[in-house]
Structure formats: structure tokens, C-alpha cells
Amino acid sequence: MANVVVVGAQWGDEGKGKIVDWLSLEADVVVRFQGGHNAGHTLVIGNQTYKLALLPSGIVRPGKLSVIGNGVVLDPHHLVDEIAKLAGQGIEVSPANLKIAENVTLILSLHRELDAHREQASTDAVKIGTTKRGIGPAYEDKVGRRAIRLMDLAELDTLDEKIARLLAHHEPLRRGLGLEPVTAQTIRDELTCVAPKVLPFMDTTWDLLETARRDGKRILFEGAQGALLDVDHGTYPFVTSSNTVAANAATGSGLGPKAIGYVLGIAKAYTTRVGGGPFPTELTDKTGELIGDRGHEFGTNTGRRRRCGWFDAVLVRQAVKTSGIDGIALTKLDILDGFEEIKVCVNYKLDGAFIDHLPASQAAQARIEPVYETIEGWEGTTAGARSWADLPAQAIKYVRRIEELIEAPVALLSTSPERLDTILVHNPFQDR
Ligand code: IMP
Image (cartoon, rainbow, N blue to C red; front, side, top):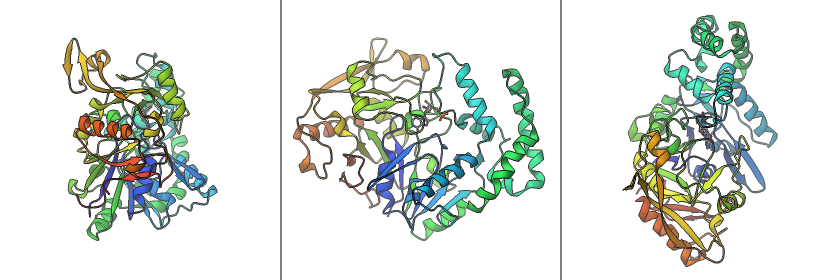
């Protein structure tokens, strides 16, 4: 029985929440391994909608253990708020169903301020369009070896020297940017007031996960964002600040690479992106608007309108390779219902030559032009389909062509936000 890693195969917002929720029914443990509360996972269960940003999607299911791994950046104040919000919806989060890595990096108010300041100070051409949640600055401090980590809240006698080390970097930076100075006492207060609320969740999660793995428990690793937002493999610098590819499930949770079994990539039947950066198949016309309206393409967290475009097989094929994707869950096919024709990007043209991958250079990424194949659309609806027999023949043809182009099979087809509206081809938890 394989463990399963779920990763986005585009620029995030592929509908991971529903798929993770669907899979979590078969999992014992659900783990977040990167990112922070920049993620937005929407779960629709019966007539309830849960919007999660930081907590693993398994949290809404009784009897499942949720783990926030060391690869995440955690805003403790946001955590407390998200737990309170769920409590208001009748979901109890306690140390019995949530464990947080003791070595997780904390996001502080100075990270949020820095993130927002940089965004506001950037011109449109270079604006990353971050979620302003402090994700990037927190990861910078982690690799800069000056971050405050969860366990530091349990060692208050040494917290001051850690804050001093952090401020030795941030004070001159803030001065240079014209930001108000921040005192050590402010940071200390911000941390000590929240410490009693988050420390009960702290655990040695790498050990706990290894024990679970050895005991044959099924672990579901829940990726956030998408492969094209990966800090190494994405559209740099228009990316998030963590590795979003599947291999990071191991590093970000403290397990060896063999703990990762099946890699399930999630892709929409078209493409969306929020924030700045290249988007070869973007549609800035009425068709793009129509896809956005029909697909309710607004950020779960920030409410921003998402940019929309045709399915880009080049990007997803690349994600299949950089994440080692075994199968794809294709989502939101119904948004394309009724289109007379649908385009799929099969190649790029760069300076007059065809290329079959996204070039690494920022300038080249901005210059590439999509090469399209046009596929006949279908009449009737795919919404709510629960078997292949429910799908129009032409919709099946579209899915088959995508499989060919991305060099990976479709393991699941999601046909509405409802959990049961799913066509299962291959159960990722079953051995291949
Ligand atoms: P950050 O992760 O807030 O630093 O934002 C960096 C880039 O990643 C921006 O383009 C964001 O719009 C994008 N991003 C971050 N989280 C998500 C997500 O959950 N879905 C889609 N895009 C995201």
C-alpha cells in the first residue's frame, strides 16, 4: 500500500482541497510539508464549505491525524484564528488530531510587513503578486539561519538572544527601506502571548511519521501551490519561496524519499494563475473572462481574480517530470462544457524555433509563444458525471489527448466540487 503525495501540476488552485479530502477518507495521516497560510484549500462536504489555508485538509475528518511538517512556515496567530474559525463550524482541533513539527519556522509580524512593503514598492513589471502573508521573508530567515522556530517558544530563557540575532538582520534592512523600527520587546510579546496556545501541538513529527509509516499507516502528503510556483523549477522569480515539487514531501516532513509512494498531480482542464509572471496561454479576451466567471476563478484567500487560459500541455508535461507524477487528477472539465472548440498548447515557439519545454530564462519565458492544437468541443454536460459512460464522447477524446500530451494517465476526474462527483480510474492508495 503506497503513501500518496498530492501536488499541483500548474500554478496552484488546481482543486487540491477536494482531491485531498476525497483521498483522506482512506488515509490515516495527512501532512502539509511546505508553504504556509498562502495556500487556499476549499472543501465542500454536504452543505458545509470549509476554507483552509494552513491546516491539512484531513482536519475536517474525524479520526485522522493532521501534521504540519518542518518544511512549512507557520504564522502562530493565523493558526489560532484558523482553529477558532473551524471551531465555529463544529470542527474540533486539539493536540489529539493536530501535531506540529517542533522545528517548524515561524512567520512573525515583521515578515508580513516586509512582504507587503516590497509588494507595494515594486513596479507592476516586477511585482510578484505575493499573498503578503510573510511567506518569502520567513523562508529567507530560515535559510539565513536566524529564524525563530516553534521549539524556541518553549525555551524562553534563550529567546532573547534569538530575537537579537534576527533583529541584527532586520533592523538595518528596515532602516534602509524606511520602515518603522521594531523592538525586541514587541517581538517577544508577540511570541510569548501566543506560545501557550500553540505549544500543546508541538511534537517530534519526523519520528511520529516514521513510526506511522512502519506501522503500515497510510500517509497522505498534501502539497500547496503548484509545480510552476516551485522556487527552483517554476517561473522564477515569479514563484513562491518553497519547493512545491513532490520530492519535498520527504524533506519537508523529515522522512526518507522511499516514504513517498504514488505521486498524484492535480491539473485543471484549463490553466489559471494569480499574481505576476509569464503565462503563455493566457486569454485576455472574452473567452478568458468566460472561463474565469464559470470557474469562479477568484483566490480563496485574497479574493483576487485569477488569470485564465487554455490548457498548457507543455507545462503540465514538465511538472509530470519534475515531480515524478504517476497519475493526474483532472479537475473542472465541466467549465469547458458547451465550447465549440477548445485549444490545447502542445509546444512553444521561441525566436522562430519550436521547443517542447519551458525555458529556464526569465527573458525567454516572456518571449515564448504557444503553439495550439484545436479540439472540437462537446454538447451536453460533464458536470456531476460519476462514470465514463456519463461523459460526452468528445469530452473523453479531450481527456485522452491530454494524457498523450502530458505523458501521464488520468487517475481521477473531478466533475464538480462535491466529493462524490469523481470518476476513479486508478486508486492512488492501491499499488500500481
Ligand atoms: P507567496 O507564496 O505569498 O510569496 O506568493 C508568491 C506567488 O505564489 C504569487 O504569485 C502568489 O499569487 C502565488 N501563490 C502563493 N500561494 C498560492 C496558492 O495557494 N495558489 C495560487 N497561487 C499562490
